[in-house]
Length: 452
Image 1 (cartoon, rainbow, N blue to C red):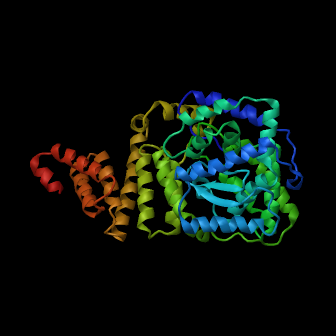
Image 2: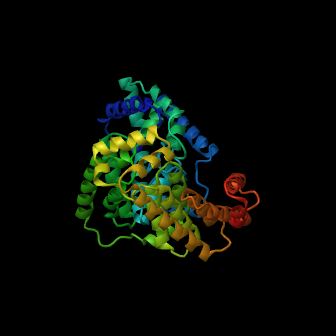
Image 3: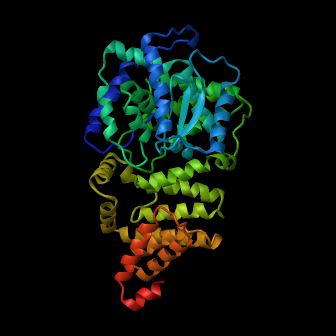
């Protein structure tokens, strides 16, 4: 699973500790749930899991969308079928508001899927492959076994609590919450288990989804999607570890082919999006807030392709194009190399978004790339206005865009249009009023009046 973006140099030490901890239970074998006997150590971990559930709800990290929540719950319950539920397990399936591509299971049966992971999937069968993997972690008592192994080897993982001081925006907020409960919770909910336990979860999850009527070939396809490389991530975690994804995909492709199943349910992307769209919309906004414009654009394009006449989706796509500025929508080959990754990391941590854009615009082709991105943004904003003249958001976006292009009268006009259409209690009303006022003061009085 995944470690979050870090913002301090302490991350390297934190990551090293996580890796050491993970390796320490890399040889831990499996144990049938029917043979499992609870010790005081296990019961303490169970209490921590229950407390973590409460914390996630208290911090409002659980996405409150009844239709989506019911959908994920239905898929999860369908995978469980009529198999007996292990002792001290109450299966619950929830969605978390976090753009990290991540999912995890707590030993008490709570299974969480991040909006970041839901956003990258294409259909229900792929979701089933993720949930089947996580269900196995619960039924095979992987968290308890990992915790016992860590204690036996006396690995010090308390330093992982330092993770609480890193991370930012909406990215990795679940990891920050887990850090308050100690090393084992961070390790099992963020970074993942040993390779042996994860391979077992893959195999069992694939068999589980096949029994539930899904096409098992959806699991290797999921690994292809997880291998997407659009944005630099400071730390690679389990769900995005490139070499392991290749190995896992190959192993599950072989297993799926050997099962020789005929057909199997996959469902269409449109059907999947009818449930997952709220998660994707949230994720686009979160990615934009975390300087992940390429990822935001890819997700927005998926929604626009699905419903090209949806004005809200057009605005999200336009916002992403505008946020790209002088950056291309996909990384170059050089950016994907180690040196390019290192340069991206340096810019991410040392520069603000504005400073990074200034550097990009100074590069050959930077201004032209910005012009293309801004043209695409304006096109989608205007298309949204034509579709829904009552919608305020495209006017705000146009105001930002025109201000960046030094089209001051146009920016003033759009800001006032936004203020007329937005709700009286809009959270950014005062901010937009101030921007419009400052722009008006910068113009001669005649032009300022014309801007209205």
